[in-house]
Image 1 (cartoon, rainbow, N blue to C red):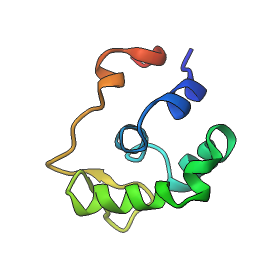
Image 2: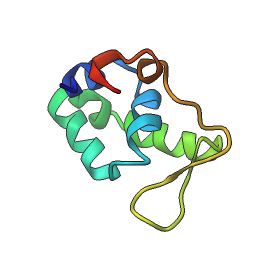
Image 3: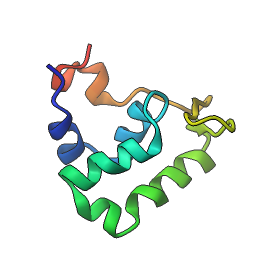
Length: 87
Protein backbone atom coordinates (compact mmCIF):
# COMPACT_ATOMS: atom_id res chain seq x y z
CA UNK A 1 0.00 0.00 0.00
CA UNK A 2 1.29 3.43 -0.95
CA UNK A 3 2.30 5.56 2.06
CA UNK A 4 1.27 9.03 0.82
CA UNK A 5 1.56 10.59 4.25
CA UNK A 6 5.17 9.41 4.55
CA UNK A 7 6.03 10.77 1.12
CA UNK A 8 4.55 14.22 1.74
CA UNK A 9 6.00 14.50 5.25
CA UNK A 10 9.50 13.15 4.59
CA UNK A 11 10.53 13.86 0.99
CA UNK A 12 11.60 17.15 -0.55
CA UNK A 13 8.94 19.24 -2.24
CA UNK A 14 10.86 19.03 -5.51
CA UNK A 15 10.98 15.23 -5.41
CA UNK A 16 7.26 15.05 -4.63
CA UNK A 17 6.49 17.33 -7.57
CA UNK A 18 8.78 15.44 -9.94
CA UNK A 19 7.02 12.19 -9.12
CA UNK A 20 3.40 13.27 -8.79
CA UNK A 21 2.96 16.31 -11.08
CA UNK A 22 3.05 14.34 -14.37
CA UNK A 23 0.22 12.11 -13.07
CA UNK A 24 -1.66 14.23 -10.51
CA UNK A 25 -3.12 17.74 -10.99
CA UNK A 26 -1.43 20.51 -8.99
CA UNK A 27 -4.56 21.21 -6.88
CA UNK A 28 -4.50 17.60 -5.65
CA UNK A 29 -0.83 17.89 -4.68
CA UNK A 30 -1.62 21.16 -2.91
CA UNK A 31 -4.46 19.48 -1.02
CA UNK A 32 -2.18 16.65 0.12
CA UNK A 33 0.27 19.19 1.54
CA UNK A 34 -2.61 20.93 3.31
CA UNK A 35 -3.47 17.58 4.91
CA UNK A 36 0.04 16.42 5.80
CA UNK A 37 2.42 19.41 5.90
CA UNK A 38 0.44 22.65 5.74
CA UNK A 39 3.39 24.98 6.23
CA UNK A 40 4.68 24.08 2.72
CA UNK A 41 1.54 25.63 1.21
CA UNK A 42 1.14 28.41 3.77
CA UNK A 43 4.61 29.88 3.16
CA UNK A 44 4.39 29.59 -0.65
CA UNK A 45 7.15 27.01 -0.91
CA UNK A 46 5.06 24.60 -3.00
CA UNK A 47 4.25 27.16 -5.70
CA UNK A 48 7.82 28.52 -5.72
CA UNK A 49 9.23 25.03 -6.15
CA UNK A 50 6.74 24.19 -8.90
CA UNK A 51 7.68 27.34 -10.81
CA UNK A 52 11.40 26.59 -10.34
CA UNK A 53 11.20 23.03 -11.70
CA UNK A 54 9.37 24.43 -14.74
CA UNK A 55 12.11 27.07 -15.26
CA UNK A 56 14.87 24.48 -14.80
CA UNK A 57 13.38 22.24 -17.48
CA UNK A 58 12.46 19.36 -15.21
CA UNK A 59 8.73 19.67 -15.97
CA UNK A 60 7.12 21.19 -19.05
CA UNK A 61 3.81 23.04 -18.96
CA UNK A 62 1.85 22.10 -22.06
CA UNK A 63 -1.51 23.83 -21.61
CA UNK A 64 -3.03 20.65 -20.19
CA UNK A 65 -3.83 19.95 -16.52
CA UNK A 66 -0.71 17.79 -16.13
CA UNK A 67 2.81 18.92 -17.03
CA UNK A 68 5.08 16.59 -18.98
CA UNK A 69 8.50 15.31 -18.01
CA UNK A 70 11.08 17.58 -19.60
CA UNK A 71 14.61 16.53 -20.70
CA UNK A 72 16.13 17.41 -17.31
CA UNK A 73 13.56 15.33 -15.39
CA UNK A 74 15.04 12.60 -13.19
CA UNK A 75 13.12 10.07 -11.19
CA UNK A 76 13.40 10.84 -7.45
CA UNK A 77 15.46 8.45 -5.34
CA UNK A 78 12.51 7.50 -3.15
CA UNK A 79 10.90 6.06 -6.29
CA UNK A 80 13.97 4.22 -7.58
CA UNK A 81 14.53 2.76 -4.10
CA UNK A 82 10.91 1.50 -4.01
CA UNK A 83 10.35 3.39 -0.77
CA UNK A 84 6.78 3.91 0.53
CA UNK A 85 5.35 1.04 -1.48
CA UNK A 86 5.96 2.59 -4.90
CA UNK A 87 6.42 -0.03 -7.60
